[in-house]
Structures are given as structure tokens and as C-alpha cells.
Length: 388
Ligand code: FAD
Ligand code: DHB
Image 1 (cartoon, helix red, strand yellow):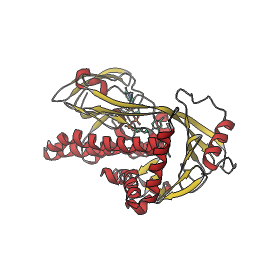
Image 2 (cartoon, protein in one colour):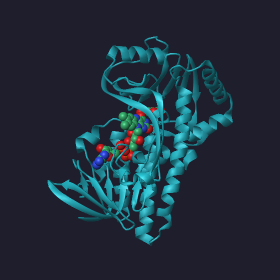
Image 3 (cartoon, helix red, strand yellow):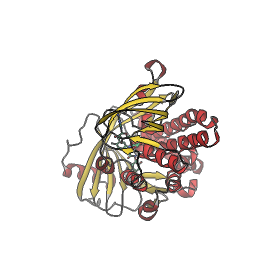
Image 4 (tube, helix red, strand yellow):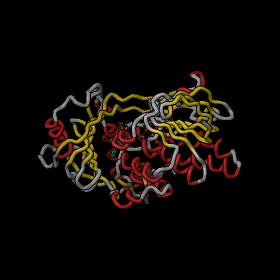
């Protein structure tokens, strides 16, 4: 089988890349390990930056997002019971949208309708060779062993995928940081506690109240590393969330817990993100701790950048945009890392944290709440304006 562009992974980045290429007249083949039902149900991120929404509109995949997505212009800090609003849209000129990642995935699959080239349940992709002219892969397609030759290979297969391993060990460096805490995320059939997100920092740890709609909440709890998703009872989760978010007043609306996920907090950047004709995109190239909700947004930005570069290669025979992919994607990835790390250390008290660090965090909050320049800088990063 021959294809101009082979894409491993049908997460948001792989699907979007394929769609944007198609709109520019470039065919691609997408190989996804999981089933369609699985990827459409995988609950993950939900905060979309304005730039992400613009890209999804350009892909013609934002009709439902524009109808059902919730536009947010601010959020609330709750710091040991004190409330402070962060009016990020007024400060940065950009809003954010709340809309589930699995809905983005569904919409991107739906817009391609019966178009060929998207294969689910392909569990044995192996990258045999990557050269200066293309790449060679093997996998089982429709029950038959198949060899795929492509001109460009896009690794959109997430942090645990195979594409990054196609870069020879001696040429790849992974930069990473692991945090000494995790997040327990729940999706619940309960209205959000307030119309805006609430980031709560208390002596008992961090908690976040987010949402997917007016009737479905997305809530996160800082938990010790090593905790498993099933360790706490539903009652214990609600009690702890209410304690951290409302001071234990019982004001947090509760409901059935529909889904739980344990998210280890980790930052990682692979360098390089390009090796010959292989380009790493999204989580395959870098992951961030979820604190600032940047993972999905960085993945979408990478996919758009690569789609534009390939379009100018095939359309105008230009190589410069392809050469610019790695430095541009890495610059943005590191800006995303930096803000995610800053927000993570602002929101969480590490186990065994010494009083000095606690005071430092308090000072950073005081600065953020009293200085408009500091608040604007934060808002520009939170909304992604700073990475444009
Ligand atoms: P993915 O969405 O990971 O997609 C990769 C795709 O490749 C998957 O469909 C996978 O099945 C497929 N694949 C993997 N290996 C192979 C293979 N060998 N062959 C073929 N296909 C393969 N970000 C936030 O901003 N906020 C959050 O709250 C948040 N929560 C998260 C919770 C969890 C549990 C996780 C894991 C991530 C979370 N993220 C969050 C990060 C965000 O979801 C990711 O940054 C985003 O999914 C990246 O998109 P992607 O397309 O690059 O990778
Ligand atoms: C969500 C996750 C985040 O990490 C965040 O900062 C905001 C929202 C979410 O999943 O809704």
C-alpha cells in the first residue's frame, strides 16, 4: 500500500491532521490501535483555547462545539476559603471553551463520513524504516499482513505509542519531570458548583471544579502518588471534594459518578521531534501535567502546524515550512511546559514540603492577585495567547 502521509493514532491530533490535509487535497492513511467506540468514549481533557476552537472551525468540525460548548471568560481561585475571580478574557482578549475531548474526537470522525483511510483496531503497527524519502511500516489491515510505504510519517500515537521509538536511541533525548502527587478525576451527573471553574487550594490539597455541560461536572482531586482509581468510595470522594472546594459546607452538588481516572502528574519533552521523514505530534512528542489544561491544546497546535507545512510542500514545493516544524513545535512545547510547571507548583503542596516553599507559594499568589501586569501575563498563558 502506498500513501503520501501515514498517520499513526486517531486521537485529536491524528484525526485533525488527516482532516486538514484532506481539505488541502492531500490523502492520508490513519492507523488506530483501539476501536472507534473506545476512542469516542475516552474521557480526558475539556478546556479548549480560542486558537484550538479556531482550528476546529477551519477543519469544519466545530458546528456542535459552537452550539454546545460553554464559553468561559473567567475562573475563580479559592485560597483557604477566600474567593478571587481571574477575569482572563478581559485581561488577554481571549476566552476558552468547555467541551469534552471525546466530543472533539467524535466530531472529527463524523466529518469524514464514509471517506476511506481511517482504520480502527490496528494493533500491530511497526515502523520498519524511516529515511530521507519516506517510511516503511507493517501492520495487519482487514485481516491481511500489509506493508505500507509513505512519503511522510506522522507520529500522533500519544505518549505510549510506537512512533517515538522509531527514532534511534542515540539520537533521542527525553526531558522529564515527575511530580510527587497525582490527580483523581471524576465525571459526575451533577450540575457544576458554580458557572465558572473553581481552582481550590487548601491545607488538605488541591481540587478543581470543572464541567462538561450544565448537568455534568468534571472534578479533580490531588491524591498521593501510587493511589489507584478505585481506592476511595464515592462517598469519600464527594466528602473530600466538598471539603476542599467549599470548606465542608455540603454546598457541592453531588450525583452519580460516571467515570474515574487517575492521572499521574508528569512533564516530558522529546528532542528532536523530527527524524528524517518522521514527525512527532502532540503527546507522542510532549506531555504536560494537566494543571493548566494545555495537553490537548498543544496537540492541536502541532497538528495544524504540520498540516500547513505538508500543504506548502505538496502545494508549492516549499521545504522551509517543514524545516520550521521542529523548532516551532518545540518552542511552543517548552512554553507549555513552563506554564504547566508554574501552575502545578502554584496549586499543589508537595508531601514533606518545607514551610519556606509554602510561604513562596503564598507570595506568588499575592503577587498574582495584586499586580495587573502579573495577572495579564498569567491570563495570556492560560488562554494560549502567549504561544501564538
Ligand atoms: P492521544 O489522545 O493520546 O491519541 C493517541 C492515539 O494513538 C490514541 O487513540 C491511541 O489509542 C493511539 N495509539 C497509541 N499507540 C498506538 C499504536 N501503537 N498504534 C496505533 N495507534 C496507537 N489534557 C488536558 O489539557 N486536560 C486534562 O484534563 C487532561 N486529562 C487527561 C487525562 C488522561 C487520563 C490522559 C491520559 C491525558 C489527559 N490530558 C489532559 C492530556 C490530553 O488528553 C492529551 O494531551 C491529548 O489527548 C493529546 O492528543 P494526541 O492526539 O496527541 O494523543
Ligand atoms: C479541565 C482540566 C484542567 O486541568 C483544567 O485546568 C481545567 C479544566 C477539565 O478537564 O475540564
